[in-house]
Length: 319
Length: 235
Ligand SMILES: Nc1ncnc2c1ncn2[C@@H]1O[C@H](COP(=O)(O)OP(=O)(O)O)[C@@H](O)[C@H]1O
Ligand SMILES: [Mg+2]
Image (spheres, each protein chain N blue to C red):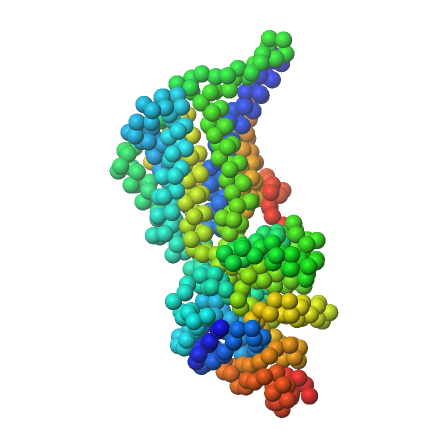
């Protein structure tokens, strides 16, 4: 390999890493709201993402979004619309089931209700997976957009030797992801709702004294977290095929990203997911593809070992 | 304003409050004193709805509190400054105060209340962008009181605001309470271990022992009472 070729490969892997990393980042932000901020363990989060993928798929095909917005942009509109839909699903499931083991109900439970959350959400995960298998079948599907076979070219640089291609489909997905993350970060840090969510997580009893309905705060956070991850799923579905068990492949990435970023930090979770995407793609330069996930976990263990509080870990302990 | 009528409360089977009756009139400063474990904190938690009473009545401003969910009680005008301060550690000082002003009344009066709080306790202004978890104990207590005031309450309940503080800091907190009382004429219900100061500042006092009111009266009556003088004032 010549030097320009090597540089081109590195740049191409970097771009691929940023593109997929921004979607991992978005997924992680969804989980960060539930696990990082509200401290609720949700093992069904990957399966909610799977629901988001199917929601985007059916919104695109069955609801006629492809007619309205065309095959080019329709998939993105569908992915974004999966958000509000899954918000309702998440909010409803929280109200019916998960509220039994979060918020003020957990005050008397062992380990802040974490054991109960673990068992309950594992059960929900199984139901969602098998329900999806019955409803949607086991055949992998994907949302096709003609944009996924065209690319923007950056360059050529260095005379005529180096140029980098950005797949249009992934580029647009990354842009949407960036906008959603910026919006949600603003809401969490600056809005009354965001502050009430953080206060409820910090100290549910004191939050109640302030007049905050802590159980409702948990419900809203859960719905929002599910919705955000569903949008990430919908965006991912425009390039990757999916099936009812796809959640299992991503739930680990999500937890790793949230822990990497430092629990409780929304932007941290984004950078955690981004790091995983980058490591995954960069590792393809030197490792066979089958070892991509190994590379992620070696890096994960290294970072957890060297910086246990994560990139953006908070110094302050909860009371 | 607040009527507590023959209230019983228990943790699972352990009875803690046994027929407690307390009356707080509008504009009054009422103190509750008593030894550790008497049930003072439990009484406050019952008023806030965190502990459910097994018998008795709680009436605030003519409204039966039992039919009001815990998170709605602050909106009626009850501010609870809890034992051990319980500030929101990861929120900044300002965000803590904003959470105090979560009630509609608090939001309406936000500007003037914030002014008053920061003038009373200027250290909060200096630390406004710092996470509350990084404050000292005394500063956290000031923040907890400020957070209570920010809700523009009708009734301010304070649970041992001097607990765990160095004597000088405890004095400072007490002086601020007297300032607040003078400036706002707020109705205050205070639980304190520093009995001498509490009875001196209050209009009326109750002595709670093992879940029962054993004595009540105006501050002059209580301070003249032999049992109070011996048990609490060390005379
Ligand atoms: N969460 C709880 N669970 C069980 N018992 C409790 C709990 N909190 C307090 N108690 C018990 O209730 C009694 C009254 O406590 P508390 O209301 O905190 O008293 P005080 O505030 O007057 O010191 C004590 O015997 C205490 O051990
Ligand atoms: Mg107490």
